[in-house]
Length: 539
Image 1 (tube, rainbow, N blue to C red):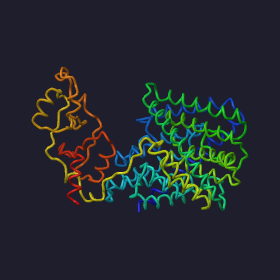
Image 2 (image 1 turned 120 degrees about the horizontal axis):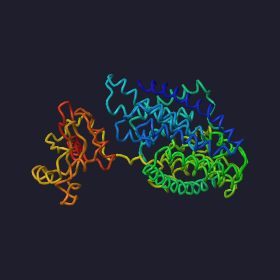
Image 3 (image 1 turned 90 degrees about the horizontal axis):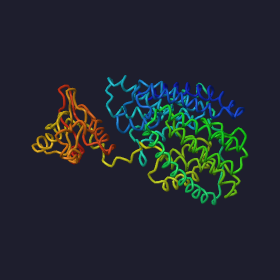
Image 4 (image 1 turned 180 degrees about the vertical axis):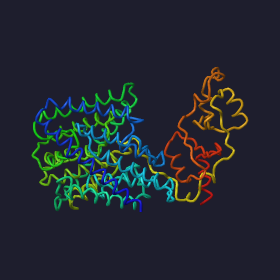
């Protein structure tokens, strides 16, 4: 019953974002760029500079936002989203996209919907909602945001369910996500009308040879998407760890993004430009008369602009850049190599292949093509292209926070809490203990592999014996344990759901234990071994 509330609130939010960007800022900026090419580079750079200032000084972590924050919250934070910087992040998304960043509105839409779901859980948990429900509400909100922003409810549902994993679905959120998506879609079309976002009319048939070309096109897109994803992850990691202020990173990214747009429009003067949300470019690529060389240049510079926009910290996501790149490559291949009469078929296959390979979302890719084309004629070729691209690209994804599926049957742990399986004889270590006292005292008398570390305020982290033992023995008397502690402890209550505890442990490779604490301090610890024993007992 909470899902319709999520849908209505998300639909209203997406309507506001749509008007602010598509019918507001970008509707003014794009014509100005097309008339005054000299303004592209300084305009995009200025917009990115403003985004960098907002994210650096008005949010706790400038590198955490959009789709990645939702995925990370789903896997590691029990669906918890910090709502304090919510509006600042949405404003930063508007300045990123509205000034010409190569991204679209799905990033703030997914983030906005997911945040609304997480926030509602806080307001309604007195109705008996548990930790698992918060994750479901998070995904339901993300689905609602995706469904509304693309006016494609099935795409929103499937993408939100595929988003957390590279090879699985968030099955538990299916029905709530379905309801929230439909309601969000209905809410949005009440403001903007029911017309499809993209003018993409599908054909009625295809030839047998088109299936072979679809597989070949899927292979090409899979390789390109894989190379791009690897490059993007490396660039994103470099930008995150670069020792310069975030606003400076964004300014550099804006400069490079603007140069991509200026370079393309200088080579190919016209209304097509690889900047901004680029919804207008979809119709131009599909219905326009662009040569294959121009389309391939557009695809390459679109990927480059997306790399600079999002790799440097731009606030949004790259669903639109990926499928627009795939459409350009597909149409170029169709008119140059396959010499096809139905070029939109190849554009559709390219779209599906790039989304499947880049986001590890093959079902979303095919459903999106079906909804975007308004028919079913392209489903089989798109499915073939998406499957080939997904297989060729392997586990590589543009998202660094997607996980592989959980292999343990979490359903077996229902109605069990961490308090039922925790080790109540937990031995903690004071933060000011030296390594020498830790090794010769605590470990010698209470041999374990890892220990909670506490100060006067409570647990501050965990420390492993292996890490402490690796320190030069000459430094043991002067090295404190808190200097070695992993300062990201996860503290849960004794009544916390064991299935959710398992998700926290298996989704972060470096996490050793969960600290169970109540009003009287640490009551115990839970490790993977404790949960595995519980799994064997219930079976």
